[in-house]
Image: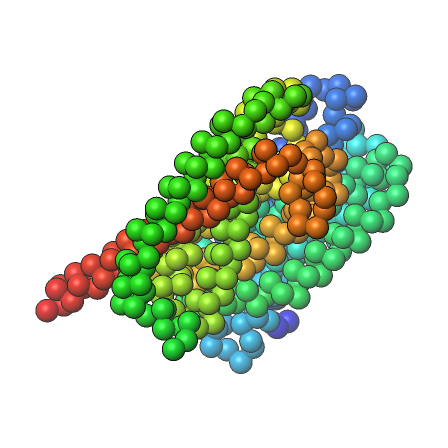
Length: 218
Length: 241
């Protein structure tokens, strides 16, 4: 499992753009929003938590097809399926690699974009915590969407239609944590719900995703 | 004699062919009767004539949810017992469910405009119906994207299972997220009278009518799917020979 993780990370780094692309997309989004909404602090601050979370979601979505598509094309996915490692484990490791290459840089960069969007300083820790707790669920659900559409020619648009509705609960609770943090309210309740979704996704989605992969590989 | 015998396509075609005229007649009586009777009810003293939207809105909303549940059960049967009719029935039900959701949303908007002063509000019930509509769209899109029918049935089945969990989760997440404008349940088994009998009985009739309407459309669409499958099999045999 560790070997697979290292291999995936190495591929993402050497293929170029694995780490940086999601963050760059996030930066552009954060720069575009003030152009659309206006540079006013009073207009930006209330929408900042939502924008940051939607941005994280879209940045995550853009890189999903990397999870399985390349391995499917060169046949290494078939090898993984027949390897002694259960396919569920392989799916979880690949989702973890996706999280390390897109989720983690995003979390590290998020405070910077929070400043750009006039997010109140009090909300910063909550933003980081909510992203830290929530983004693993995004990668896991994304792996499921990628597994469903792996055999298709133009799966990208279809995958966004399948995956984005699944992201709704995570988005609601994640943005709620940040918003409550910004307003100085207690944010523990949505945070607990968010953690519940993430843990549930981590426990159950690998089975659904590998079931979908097995169908696509037969 | 067990229920599973009807999973045999030949048997299903026989039985559904015999059932279809009766179910269709019931659907016509129920929908036309319910909606017609509803149209003739007196105006509400506060809502005026707009209250009559309820006879279209509530049955459609009820069917929108029930059809998803039916798809979930059919998908489970397909995944566990591999009965093809079950997968085809789930496929046939999805567009009907999507249309029912759309009817509920559209009539809700038409009703909301005069009553709440807005076409749309990010209310928990409205939002969760929009999310349900998105799930229907994704399900239909996945069916149409995959060529091999068995893989398509498997993948959409898995999607339906995961989607059901997340649709339910979204339902309660949006409750958390926003306070509602929509009223709570007006029809309930154990509670007392919250709705006048004048409106209640035509509404029940319309609900039954919509249920039978769904059954009619489902049977027709499933029969079409089975015939399409037979046609494809015949063509494949022809090209091989």
